[in-house]
Length: 180
Image (cartoon, rainbow, N blue to C red; front, side, top):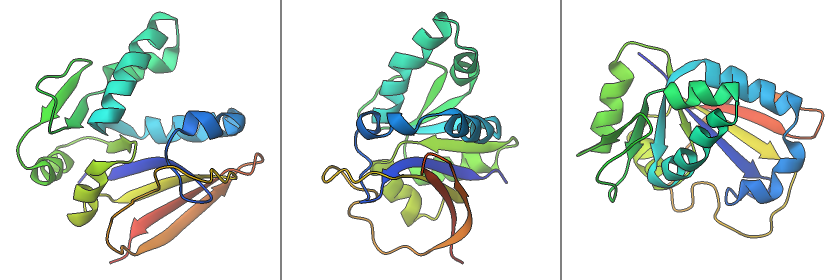
């Protein structure tokens, strides 16, 4: 079975909103290398509507500008969970009906891991149905002081630390799995 891996940027005070405002000073070669390795381990993406729409605006332009990573991002199959979208573009399939059942079905398909970027409403469903196999929390040495927080409104969920990867910049990626 394929693993579903969540990759999320978060501040020390749990904020996930607007990482472009607080994260960019830490986006360096170590950050890129880790992200590239994680991305390379996957052959499909799972996205919520907000992340999907943002990515669909940016990645095709990056490929047109000659970004070699963008070509792979654009070519990967994408599964989009949304209650409001009626159609998708950008090599994406809209998950219709019971999202939890659809994600479980996709995990059963042959292939590599499935990578999920972004944190939002979809996470409530994925946590409730225990569908995420691994979390990569990119913990930035920043206190944002306000904004939407990681997993706001989700019931208590216990995780087990699998490994941590510290970077020279102070960024640490903490990898967790659900506790059995």
